[in-house]
Image (cartoon, rainbow, N blue to C red; front, side, top):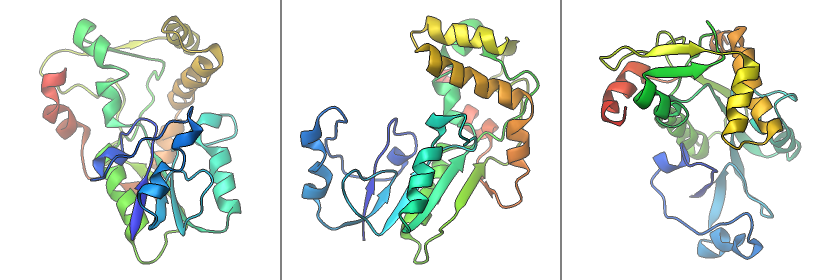
Length: 233
Protein backbone atom coordinates (compact mmCIF):
# COMPACT_ATOMS: atom_id res chain seq x y z
CA UNK A 1 0.00 0.00 0.00
CA UNK A 2 1.38 3.42 -0.99
CA UNK A 3 -0.39 6.59 0.18
CA UNK A 4 -0.13 10.09 -1.29
CA UNK A 5 -0.92 12.83 1.27
CA UNK A 6 -1.45 16.33 -0.16
CA UNK A 7 -2.46 19.61 1.39
CA UNK A 8 -2.44 23.38 1.24
CA UNK A 9 -1.16 24.31 4.71
CA UNK A 10 0.11 20.99 6.01
CA UNK A 11 -1.63 21.13 9.39
CA UNK A 12 -2.83 17.53 9.15
CA UNK A 13 -0.73 15.92 6.41
CA UNK A 14 2.52 16.81 8.19
CA UNK A 15 1.40 14.79 11.22
CA UNK A 16 2.03 11.70 9.08
CA UNK A 17 5.61 10.57 8.39
CA UNK A 18 6.24 11.10 4.69
CA UNK A 19 8.74 11.82 1.92
CA UNK A 20 8.36 15.20 0.22
CA UNK A 21 7.89 15.66 -3.53
CA UNK A 22 7.89 19.04 -5.28
CA UNK A 23 4.43 20.17 -6.42
CA UNK A 24 3.38 23.62 -7.58
CA UNK A 25 -0.17 24.47 -8.71
CA UNK A 26 1.33 27.18 -10.94
CA UNK A 27 3.79 24.82 -12.64
CA UNK A 28 2.04 22.01 -14.58
CA UNK A 29 5.39 20.30 -15.17
CA UNK A 30 5.38 19.26 -11.48
CA UNK A 31 1.94 17.61 -11.60
CA UNK A 32 3.28 14.16 -12.48
CA UNK A 33 6.16 14.23 -9.98
CA UNK A 34 4.33 12.34 -7.25
CA UNK A 35 3.40 9.51 -9.59
CA UNK A 36 6.74 9.21 -11.37
CA UNK A 37 8.50 9.20 -7.98
CA UNK A 38 6.43 6.23 -6.83
CA UNK A 39 4.19 4.45 -9.38
CA UNK A 40 2.68 2.24 -6.65
CA UNK A 41 0.42 4.94 -5.19
CA UNK A 42 -3.06 3.48 -4.69
CA UNK A 43 -4.55 5.75 -1.99
CA UNK A 44 -4.70 9.52 -1.85
CA UNK A 45 -5.30 12.06 0.91
CA UNK A 46 -7.15 15.10 -0.50
CA UNK A 47 -6.63 15.35 -4.26
CA UNK A 48 -5.11 13.64 -7.29
CA UNK A 49 -5.42 15.85 -10.40
CA UNK A 50 -5.31 13.87 -13.59
CA UNK A 51 -4.81 10.48 -11.94
CA UNK A 52 -6.85 7.60 -10.60
CA UNK A 53 -6.76 5.83 -7.26
CA UNK A 54 -8.59 3.14 -5.32
CA UNK A 55 -9.48 5.30 -2.31
CA UNK A 56 -9.78 9.02 -1.59
CA UNK A 57 -9.78 10.81 1.77
CA UNK A 58 -10.95 14.42 1.54
CA UNK A 59 -10.41 17.06 4.24
CA UNK A 60 -13.07 19.80 4.25
CA UNK A 61 -14.74 21.41 7.27
CA UNK A 62 -17.55 20.90 9.74
CA UNK A 63 -19.26 23.91 8.13
CA UNK A 64 -19.75 22.70 4.58
CA UNK A 65 -22.57 24.25 2.56
CA UNK A 66 -23.12 25.90 -0.80
CA UNK A 67 -22.81 29.34 0.79
CA UNK A 68 -19.23 28.54 1.81
CA UNK A 69 -17.50 27.30 -1.38
CA UNK A 70 -14.02 27.19 0.16
CA UNK A 71 -15.27 24.70 2.76
CA UNK A 72 -15.38 22.00 0.08
CA UNK A 73 -18.99 21.28 -1.01
CA UNK A 74 -18.12 21.03 -4.71
CA UNK A 75 -15.16 18.73 -4.07
CA UNK A 76 -17.41 16.61 -1.87
CA UNK A 77 -20.06 16.42 -4.59
CA UNK A 78 -17.47 15.49 -7.21
CA UNK A 79 -15.94 12.81 -4.98
CA UNK A 80 -19.31 11.13 -4.51
CA UNK A 81 -19.88 11.19 -8.27
CA UNK A 82 -16.71 9.13 -8.83
CA UNK A 83 -18.26 6.07 -7.14
CA UNK A 84 -14.95 5.19 -5.46
CA UNK A 85 -14.03 4.24 -1.90
CA UNK A 86 -13.73 7.39 0.18
CA UNK A 87 -13.92 9.18 3.50
CA UNK A 88 -14.59 12.87 4.11
CA UNK A 89 -13.06 14.44 7.22
CA UNK A 90 -15.02 17.47 8.47
CA UNK A 91 -13.25 18.87 11.53
CA UNK A 92 -14.37 21.71 13.72
CA UNK A 93 -12.02 24.63 14.33
CA UNK A 94 -8.37 23.68 14.88
CA UNK A 95 -6.45 24.17 18.13
CA UNK A 96 -3.62 25.32 15.87
CA UNK A 97 -5.55 28.50 14.98
CA UNK A 98 -4.37 29.86 18.34
CA UNK A 99 -0.80 29.60 16.98
CA UNK A 100 -1.65 31.33 13.69
CA UNK A 101 -4.81 33.45 13.42
CA UNK A 102 -4.83 34.62 17.03
CA UNK A 103 -1.16 34.42 17.99
CA UNK A 104 -0.20 38.05 17.41
CA UNK A 105 -3.05 39.57 19.43
CA UNK A 106 -2.55 37.03 22.23
CA UNK A 107 1.16 37.85 22.48
CA UNK A 108 0.96 41.61 21.99
CA UNK A 109 -2.45 42.55 23.41
CA UNK A 110 -3.45 39.60 25.63
CA UNK A 111 -6.69 39.27 23.67
CA UNK A 112 -8.51 37.16 21.09
CA UNK A 113 -10.49 39.17 18.53
CA UNK A 114 -13.56 37.55 16.99
CA UNK A 115 -17.18 37.98 15.97
CA UNK A 116 -18.15 34.75 17.75
CA UNK A 117 -19.95 36.55 20.61
CA UNK A 118 -21.05 33.76 22.99
CA UNK A 119 -20.79 31.05 20.34
CA UNK A 120 -19.11 27.82 21.39
CA UNK A 121 -16.82 25.54 19.41
CA UNK A 122 -15.70 21.93 19.71
CA UNK A 123 -12.04 22.84 19.08
CA UNK A 124 -10.09 19.86 17.76
CA UNK A 125 -6.45 18.86 17.28
CA UNK A 126 -4.70 18.43 13.93
CA UNK A 127 -3.09 15.32 15.46
CA UNK A 128 -6.49 13.72 16.07
CA UNK A 129 -7.57 14.59 12.52
CA UNK A 130 -4.37 13.08 11.11
CA UNK A 131 -4.90 9.87 13.11
CA UNK A 132 -8.37 9.49 11.63
CA UNK A 133 -6.97 10.20 8.16
CA UNK A 134 -4.49 7.36 8.59
CA UNK A 135 -7.29 5.00 9.64
CA UNK A 136 -9.44 6.09 6.70
CA UNK A 137 -6.55 5.43 4.32
CA UNK A 138 -5.35 2.11 5.75
CA UNK A 139 -8.39 0.33 7.22
CA UNK A 140 -9.20 -2.77 5.22
CA UNK A 141 -12.84 -1.72 4.87
CA UNK A 142 -13.39 1.72 3.37
CA UNK A 143 -15.34 4.14 5.59
CA UNK A 144 -17.44 5.56 2.70
CA UNK A 145 -18.92 8.27 4.91
CA UNK A 146 -18.45 11.78 6.29
CA UNK A 147 -16.73 12.10 9.67
CA UNK A 148 -17.65 15.17 11.73
CA UNK A 149 -14.65 15.69 14.04
CA UNK A 150 -14.67 17.71 17.26
CA UNK A 151 -12.68 17.85 20.44
CA UNK A 152 -14.07 16.55 23.75
CA UNK A 153 -15.23 19.99 24.97
CA UNK A 154 -17.58 22.73 23.78
CA UNK A 155 -15.87 26.05 24.56
CA UNK A 156 -16.30 29.75 23.84
CA UNK A 157 -13.36 32.10 23.35
CA UNK A 158 -14.11 33.41 26.84
CA UNK A 159 -13.48 29.88 28.16
CA UNK A 160 -10.20 29.45 26.27
CA UNK A 161 -7.87 30.97 28.87
CA UNK A 162 -5.10 28.68 30.11
CA UNK A 163 -1.91 30.72 29.96
CA UNK A 164 -1.54 31.82 33.56
CA UNK A 165 -2.33 35.41 32.62
CA UNK A 166 -5.52 37.27 31.79
CA UNK A 167 -6.53 36.85 28.14
CA UNK A 168 -9.66 38.76 27.14
CA UNK A 169 -12.06 38.13 24.29
CA UNK A 170 -12.55 41.28 22.22
CA UNK A 171 -15.96 41.03 20.60
CA UNK A 172 -16.48 42.78 17.28
CA UNK A 173 -19.21 42.63 14.64
CA UNK A 174 -19.06 40.51 11.50
CA UNK A 175 -18.66 43.68 9.42
CA UNK A 176 -15.82 44.90 11.63
CA UNK A 177 -14.11 41.52 11.28
CA UNK A 178 -14.49 41.70 7.50
CA UNK A 179 -12.86 45.14 7.51
CA UNK A 180 -10.08 43.78 9.71
CA UNK A 181 -9.39 40.97 7.22
CA UNK A 182 -9.40 43.31 4.23
CA UNK A 183 -6.95 45.59 6.07
CA UNK A 184 -4.59 42.59 6.13
CA UNK A 185 -4.85 42.36 2.34
CA UNK A 186 -7.46 39.63 1.93
CA UNK A 187 -9.79 40.00 -1.08
CA UNK A 188 -13.17 41.42 -0.06
CA UNK A 189 -15.12 38.30 -1.07
CA UNK A 190 -12.82 35.97 0.86
CA UNK A 191 -12.83 38.30 3.87
CA UNK A 192 -16.63 38.35 3.77
CA UNK A 193 -16.85 34.56 3.68
CA UNK A 194 -14.43 34.13 6.60
CA UNK A 195 -16.13 36.75 8.76
CA UNK A 196 -19.58 35.30 8.02
CA UNK A 197 -18.39 32.00 9.51
CA UNK A 198 -17.90 33.81 12.80
CA UNK A 199 -21.45 35.14 12.52
CA UNK A 200 -22.81 31.68 11.77
CA UNK A 201 -21.09 30.25 14.82
CA UNK A 202 -22.13 33.17 17.02
CA UNK A 203 -25.65 31.90 16.36
CA UNK A 204 -24.85 28.35 17.46
CA UNK A 205 -23.67 26.75 14.21
CA UNK A 206 -20.79 24.83 15.78
CA UNK A 207 -22.84 23.96 18.86
CA UNK A 208 -25.30 22.10 16.64
CA UNK A 209 -22.42 20.30 14.93
CA UNK A 210 -21.01 19.29 18.33
CA UNK A 211 -24.33 17.58 19.10
CA UNK A 212 -24.15 15.41 15.95
CA UNK A 213 -24.91 11.82 17.07
CA UNK A 214 -22.29 10.14 14.87
CA UNK A 215 -19.39 12.57 15.25
CA UNK A 216 -15.82 11.49 16.00
CA UNK A 217 -14.50 12.98 19.24
CA UNK A 218 -10.77 13.64 19.50
CA UNK A 219 -9.02 12.82 22.77
CA UNK A 220 -6.85 15.92 23.18
CA UNK A 221 -8.19 18.87 25.18
CA UNK A 222 -7.54 22.52 24.40
CA UNK A 223 -5.93 22.92 27.82
CA UNK A 224 -3.34 20.22 27.08
CA UNK A 225 -2.59 21.80 23.69
CA UNK A 226 -2.13 25.31 25.11
CA UNK A 227 0.00 24.07 28.00
CA UNK A 228 2.22 22.14 25.58
CA UNK A 229 2.66 25.27 23.43
CA UNK A 230 2.79 27.81 26.26
CA UNK A 231 6.18 29.16 25.20
CA UNK A 232 4.76 30.20 21.82
CA UNK A 233 2.31 32.57 23.48
